[in-house]
Figure 1 (tube, rainbow, N blue to C red):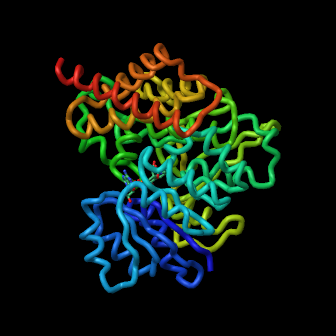
Figure 2 (figure 1 turned 45 degrees about the vertical axis):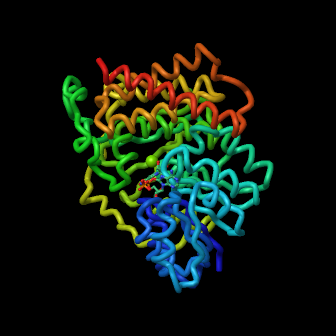
Length: 391
Ligand code: NAD
Ligand code: MG
């Protein structure tokens, strides 16, 4: 039996992880589950998976969670510190599936125990890639990618010499607005941005897919996790989203990973790694699919891709600033304070202000510096949002 903890078990990735674990109860011993305000679902999961501990991120949800779990023997806790403390309970694998920068600290804490971190929380690598990878190396811990593109690259690299890689191509669906006239993007609504053509995901990542901020994050994630140089990392729009990524080698071969739109594929690969095991995902019927399409990614439509290149070139703390500004800009878009295209302008303005004031490309990326940069970037974004909203 493998001991498993899931950070963010009530989210989209969390639920898919719970689904796979629930199908093989004899293989897993669930240590802790963490969630947010959906305490009813968190309690249900904790009962059905026989978890030792359930933690809600919010102190004002503690009483409800406690009531829902009374008499079950499941321990209950609340708050950000309690989530991080759950990382100190021994587990063989931690699933990092909290959304946003809040996922960073629990994951880093788990790495200190030399364990395996299955990483869906891309913000961890974007904000603190050098620190995260350094912590894993220092503690003999393993990080397994769960983002579908990175799982695809990871799988294409099995048995290969990484120095023979010439390039990596990350595919993008193009999001909800791929075929919209450019002039209509400024007036795109939250509802329109919240529907994805292919994948069923949490609201934040779905909007990030429409703006391509999600892909921008994934390019940075690719650089940080695999250590490729920015010039080796490409994006292509692939409307069917069936090829998740391709790896190009120095002999011209391109290895593509093709699979259904089902995150249980990448999650299951991480749960079973280094083996493979049966997964309940659709088997593709290639004759029915019949064709796959590719379109060059247009930086005029997707300014986030251009910003990602700058962030990769600068390195250091620019990823932390980029992510925090992006999260705060997304909050403002969801709150109806700014328009869809304002998000990219806000992020660019915050990055240039921070460059001017601190210079972001420092060599040592510590957790404290990341958290400080995150804080300042959010504050600057809020100031700019207020100015934008006042115009
Ligand atoms: P989601 O919004 O569906 O779920 C997020 C989870 O995190 C929930 O359990 C929620 O309660 C918890 N949470 C939210 N804010 C929190 C906070 N401040 N502190 C503690 N817990 C908090 O998100 P998701 O779509 O499952 O995405 C999770 C992560 O996986 C993100 O980093 C996302 O980019 C990444 N990812 C998601 C998908 C996908 O298909 N959904 C694919 C690839 C990568
Ligand atoms: Mg992805």
